[in-house]
Image 1 (cartoon, rainbow, N blue to C red):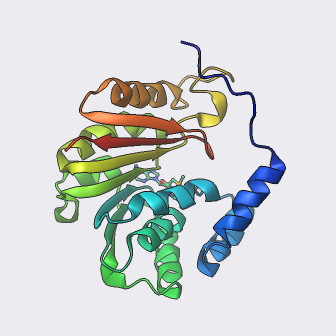
Image 2: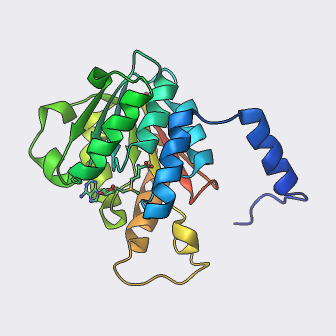
Length: 221
Ligand SMILES: C[S@@+](CC[C@H](N)C(=O)[O-])C[C@H]1O[C@@H](n2cnc3c(N)ncnc32)[C@H](O)[C@@H]1O
């Protein structure tokens, strides 16, 4: 199906203007960006972070798959405000220790963010009590070949009206086929989760072409 014609696309000047209007991110987010880059720690694109914060407003209970040093977690926490809580999953304790230090520096109370240090599918299967839900927001940003399995685990844990947000669904062009994929690189599973959610009438789903592609799906109440 042809997409809507666009006679105009935003250019650098427009994107700079958006950045100016948005204002500087929280100083701790800037510190995290500075730390992640040189170490090659993959974190969310800043525009996607801003979007995640907007989506988190009013969503008290969030779950995140893939913490790293806590950048997306902090965007979520800032969007939620003081009343919000997050359970975030990552088996890499060194990274999550650093995340905790960043969150403290940003003034986010320890009680608001629980960390589960385990592979996410194991943690869900073990029925970790923190992961019982129901959750109002689920953010997926870990192993791409596991995305459909994360969705399966999260689905019964979602509150009516919950949002499922997944990063990297464009996978630098591999998902659409505009760039070549390799076997086992997660492309097939990214196609699967996008197709499944788009075809599921229980969800209203869209893919935002920001960062590496941000899928947003709302579970109809
Ligand atoms: C892309 S990074 C997460 C970035 C983070 N969401 C952010 O934007 O700041 C992916 C993370 O998934 C973690 N990870 C790897 N295997 C995992 C698994 N089986 N379950 C959960 N997380 C996993 C990695 O340790 C890594 O820190």
